[in-house]
Length: 90
Image (cartoon, rainbow, N blue to C red; front, side):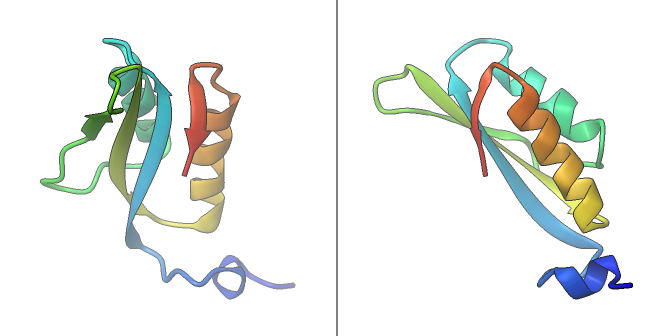
């Protein structure tokens, strides 16, 4: 059986930024933060950052976490992509 570390180029635990994009709204950053922190702790002293699109219609939210495994990251991305307000997750 192949373990998690053999399938990833990442060494865990590690600092890992997660970015989600969606339509601009007051609650989008809180929504993304809630989804991400369900699975991982935010990286110490690194705030969640929001950047609006040029026209202000969309926003990207980046939350940097302490990633412990590939399974954990997969769960975060699955929850983000399952959310109808998230248009894209990177």
